Length: 125
Image (cartoon, rainbow, N blue to C red; front, side, top):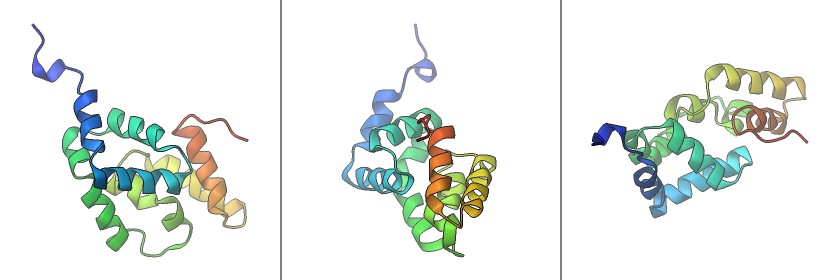
């Protein structure tokens, strides 16, 4: 007999992310990072528990209002969004992305490229 805690919760987590507002949040976050929404959904399901997924939209809205107030590169790549509000990227990796962007004339795209390569396992161009 399998205890409930040992079951695969992938289906239940995916069902949470299928709600209309969650879809919008996932699309906005995926667009910010330049990755397909399904790839972001997979990372969210693998790394967050069900309570965190349930509050995903509220966490995103809180970040929009209160997060990364200084703007600039941190706001463009979602530094606090993906390290604090929706914690799927470690602060160390995010710092590397900030440094990469700063090295390339404050171009946020180079930092996003680094995030895609390190966190979302995409090939560098």
